[in-house]
Image 1 (cartoon, rainbow, N blue to C red):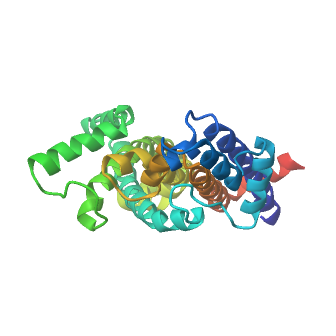
Image 2 (tube, rainbow, N blue to C red):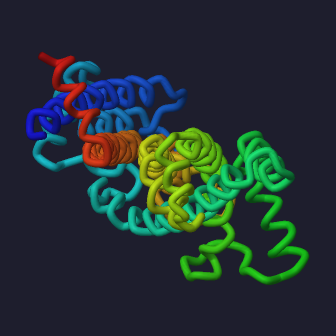
Length: 312
């Protein structure tokens, strides 16, 4: 297990190195001069030159990148051009709101997705199965921003049940969490159904039923665990995806999380803040993937053994 975790950590570091290079190169290709944006159009050439030298933006890109990575390794993600505050402080102030939104959306996605998947598998080829899978297919096809706007128009503007946007309370959380949860549940429900249908066709399930075991025990004790291996993987990936994919939803609902912060940083050409957010989300994504792999091997130890043999 230790060797497996070390291998995954090593590959994770390579991924993070790639993310840091990509984000550094990408944001420098964005049109617009951050110094001009910070100082305004009336700034003199001397002021622009002085601030550029002060921030180190007059140095070659390779020098800037090496300096950036060196600081990151010491826990310093830089200073925001716009606010003058440490990037890590800005991120940590917004991160709890994003976690709150992503966790609520994921909880809803798991509840809805697994319930729909189990019911669809249990009543395979019935109207219930067809309806559940049709909804799942429809959910995959719907853009998240469109569903969010639709929910706002219906439940906020027309019915007046929820506040418009901008808060962080439970009522403010409901609609964005539902938007994330409904869309994420579509993939989970399809995988759960596929896994359950396969497991329910195995001989040991027929044996359990022949022994007079109740249908609930057959589904949740004998079939559910074996059908959950691919679902655990996709749930882990969905968690990481939700953390990074809340950008649009946060913007639609004016939720004060990392997504809103990232969009503001991009608009103001706040390079250090954009880099910090991308790298921070990348670290979370890599850690969750490693955790999923470890959990995967715990559920089915044969997977780890197979990987070890491949590595030797």
